[in-house]
Length: 391
Image 1 (cartoon, rainbow, N blue to C red):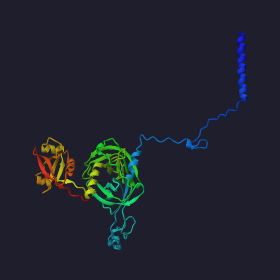
Image 2 (image 1 turned 180 degrees about the vertical axis):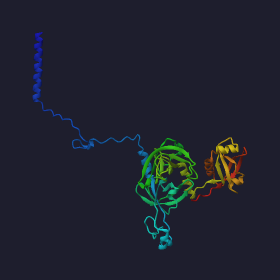
Image 3 (image 1 turned 90 degrees about the vertical axis):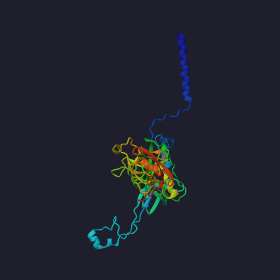
Image 4 (image 1 turned 180 degrees about the horizontal axis):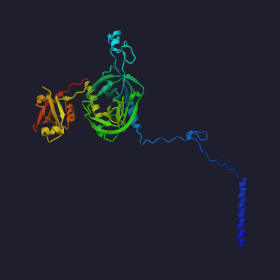
């Protein structure tokens, strides 16, 4: 046993000796660096070595906005004010009636004062056709369009439709970006939408919300109402702008808001793209919208009226009045009749009746089913042309 311990000690001694010899002859190891904390872009660590990772896009709608924003324009309109009456400059008139001839600190001699108004529009064709609201360009003497890329051009009024608060204007520029029209039948309540326009003239702005409701009517805003309701912020200057889906497709033209203060409270209304497309095509083709007309005034069926008429239904529209020698009068329709169907399509209420009749081709025949004294009968009506609304 003693011999074994002696051999073990000798072996350890030899290994240690070899280690010290190697350590003495090898080159020096590089000194260890102390750990330090560096800021991005300092001299100790180049900024190019620490580029921030791209922001996540899972919850971003940048692609939709990028697709639609170039096609949304700012609209400036102006109207020349008439020259003031010479009597307003008479000192005796001013003495008794005050300085009524001055406006905003400007003198009565100013003949061409312009009132600019701001609105928005949407380029829907590379040919330069732009959809906007009627109230944006109403009574304007001059219309200017400013594109998102900074270009500016004078616009020509192609036609208007006060019944839906839509108008079509046209500009002549090259390389115009046109928005893609969406499908309203694919839009559902709860879908995320973006509103694009120029609120209060601050510049092009995108706001986000959802579809709050579809088919809103009886708001007494337009004659024909079928609004998309949204809580995306819509303010003064957004009128005529685009309401788009998350793919950047146009689904509506922003038109109105419900507000007691003048600002957005989360209840905005847009005209569906289906209505806008039909109106636009008719205006481009005819200069105005051609709609069917039969010459009646209607009234909703309320529970009280249903009880007084002894009705067992709450759908349809009561004919409250008939235009003498109009299409309905010639076909034998009478006040008190209840219109049930228009060319086989059921009439739910007065709004549905107006829309169904408006879609009829003037000059053609249409079958109207009415309820009179608890008896249903069909009337053959020669459809007339709805008079153009003037405001």
